[in-house]
Image (tube, rainbow, N blue to C red; front, side):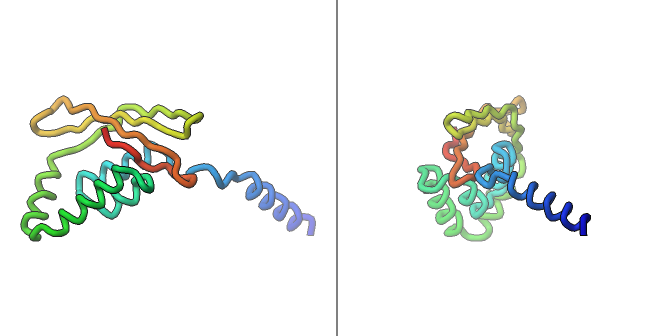
Length: 135
């Protein structure tokens, strides 16, 4: 009896201390997921990683429609060409006051072996980190 009360108290304590407003995935993880999908391309994952109502999300939805309209041979060629591109996240800077994050990354490409510097901006969107800008 004493043991079950102790377990119940522990479970209550751990569940009540969990802050449900905290994002499940870190900005780095969301960035990695977004960029991996971007270079596949996996438009379903790309769009789901974008901030609701953002210009980026609208652009990615349009790109998805355009891509789906291509013949399968063209889609396969694009996918094959994209396998030559990779990314490496260099830095993640959190701005807790504005619930935003800035992610610097390099695009490793055959024509740029030293990498092309790029950035993402992420914001909290209903307690989850979402990509809002691709710079």
